[in-house]
Image 1 (spheres, rainbow over the protein chains, first blue to last red):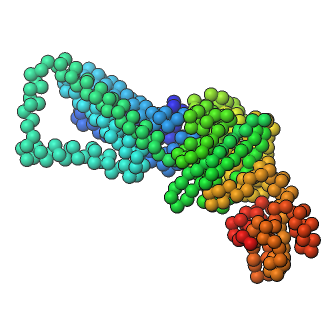
Image 2 (image 1 turned 135 degrees about the vertical axis):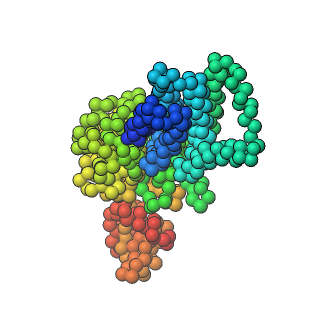
Image 3 (image 1 turned 30 degrees about the horizontal axis):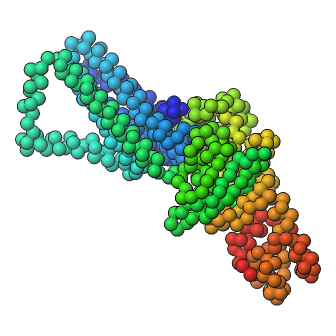
Length: 216
Length: 286
């Protein structure tokens, strides 16, 4: 299984290096106060959500699946390797973002709670989106699953924007957050990525079922 | 001597195409050549062997293991080269070693690099810059580096020049010197199979129409060249297939010497696997 994760990293080493470069560039911009940190974290998460789909597209191009399923690993391990790749990516961005937050906090004394909250929420989205997209990739293939990625990302955004425009969204409940202690907020927010992880696990089980029924 | 592959009653239906009751046996220390037209069912059979597709009926045992229940155990000792190179263009040969090493208990990185050297493959060149021959040699190096007992090749020599093919065939012959090792090889290049195969199985429209030792086939089958009138005079039970052309007729017979004794006035010659394929594929029953 480690070999397959290694494969994803090796196949996309150029893409990953350029992403890393962009992340460092953005971190510098955040430090110089050119960009808002929350925006950058969310942007990087979206970029990373696209990576697993790119991995599927590369595999499809090389017809890799047929070969991978012929290896002495079993279908669930081949599927598991892709999920671990997603987790590795999520963990890397999460750690880098945490590191960035620490530096910004030390240098600029910005609101730590807000930054951590943004990170937790975007990390959860970063886990939830692949949880929906990965089984679709196994079921439909990379090309046919790609539109769903945009649907999954943009439809909730459009719905929220529309609701708020029509004054149907009651955001006053969020004001109650201000009354809570920072420790309580961060503690609660830390549970969000756990929900993302649980969703990813359920998604893995679904993908295993899809892969088990598939013919290669 | 153990059988490396045993297939009994294999059936797989796709609606418009079906594999019907395939029985095949590959004894250790030998090469089985799978021949047949495009779409005859060779690749489908290989996919069933590798459990890439779900069979409808039948049993397959690989190196004594059931190919579904004990799939991982069986695949540890199988090397695979399919008709395409499945490695991504952005990888390099050394990357392939890193990817496959954790999958096989017996992976030998040194042996892998030895094969790369032997086949003249640059270790750090991108695969997208490789020619088709180089890609096949890379696939073969990857398939041999864990010292497999069973090698499965699906059209692996297609599109290669005769020099490269000969080099690869030599490698195969070396591998089966060990009685525990065997090779299943599907190919359109009949001359390759005539050179190295011990057994031949001919799949036609999803059925095995001929399965025997290659020498038995070549020693006993015969081709009769005759006129239409002469063909009419032959007992239909004595010929398998016939072909009628503008300049004469031909017939395929199963027992060349028996036919020559019964019809001394007709000339019966040795035949080739390619001829047999043409008789079955394009000929007709008498």
